[in-house]
Image (cartoon, rainbow, N blue to C red):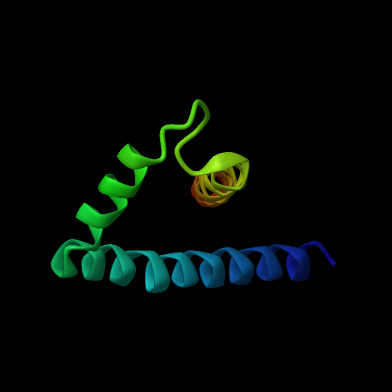
Length: 83
């Protein structure tokens, strides 16, 4: 049972890492090449109404992405220590 759980965790970690790299890296490259980064910076500058630039939803989304990255790194480092 423990071996099956370990394999599922490794598979889930690999799939999640692949998904993040497959979506975030091309999106960032597109934004850098397309000039969309300038639009985001300008939108953040214009929307200074006294709160966060993108509101509470943007803050929660940002924290969620950071949490996913931290969890992936922890799972990868745990798997390396066991070997």
